[in-house]
Every structure is written in structure tokens, then in C-alpha cells.
Image 1 (cartoon, rainbow, N blue to C red):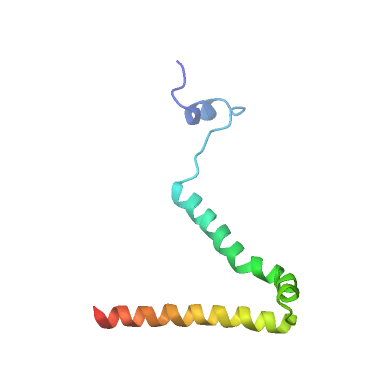
Image 2 (image 1 turned 45 degrees about the horizontal axis):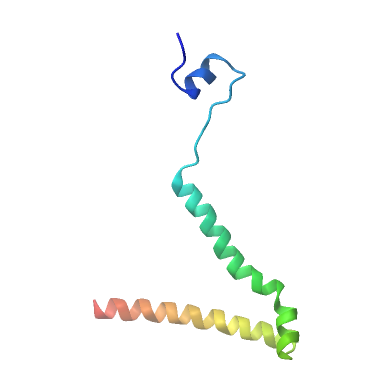
Amino acid sequence: MTPTSAASAAEREPGIPARRRIPAAILVLSVSIFVIGSAELLPMGLLMPIADEYGLSVSTAVATSMGDATACTVRGESSKSSRSASA
């Protein structure tokens, strides 16, 4: 009798590893977390070169970065409230 899948072969012979696939949702979430994390954290590592390039102090570059993040947050909240008001 021959095994019909890798899982049944692994059950019969402990030396054969079963092949498992990563679910698509887990793969998409992993890639999304990596992209979002990189987009958020990469500028923090580049603040000193950015400040040097534009002739700013590092604290001014940080304040500008935080101001941009705050503006994005406020715009996101205002677009939600305007969407719900118009619906």
C-alpha cells in the first residue's frame, strides 16, 4: 500500500517530514506588518541625515516628523467623521 500524501507518509514513517503550507492570510499579514513597520521606523533611522541635508537640527526634524504623523492621524479621523456624516 503506497501513501497518498506527504502527511500520511509522515504518519507511517517518522523520518519523513510532513509538508505544510502557510495560509495566504498569514502570509499577507506578515508582509503587511513588515511594510508598515518599515515605513514607520525607517525615517527614524534617517533623521540625522535628513536634518543635515536640510540644515535643520535633529530636534526640528523630529518635530517635523511628528507633525506629519499627527496631521495624518487628524486627517484620518476627519475623513471618517465626514464619511459617516454624509452616509
